[in-house]
Image 1 (cartoon, rainbow, N blue to C red):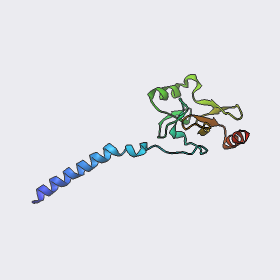
Image 2 (cartoon, rainbow, N blue to C red):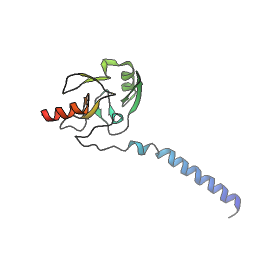
Image 3 (cartoon, rainbow, N blue to C red):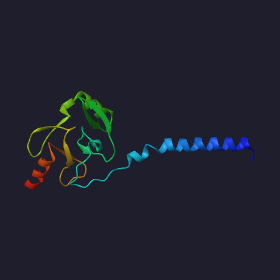
Length: 131
């Protein structure tokens, strides 16, 4: 094989590898995460409009200096406009209004999709003790 053929094949191989990397690089960040029922759920894995654990990283939305997460463009719009007061929830233990971006997020008992927002981990533990 002459030098020119080796260079052409090397460039072709590099292009193929780069294309495969580009095509599949996003896939690895979308591998669902498994969280136990008692664990705190990272904010970025929750659609804060549907109040649902999604298992993969959601779309970050900056609003009033805080980061919220939505699963689609409709949810992103609702968060930006705070339609139906979607940036807030009620702490199931204390009844106080909680900003979802600051909340301690966990699964609703017995469910692996719906979530509760607590003002703090202490409120969550007190809620569990009350059950």
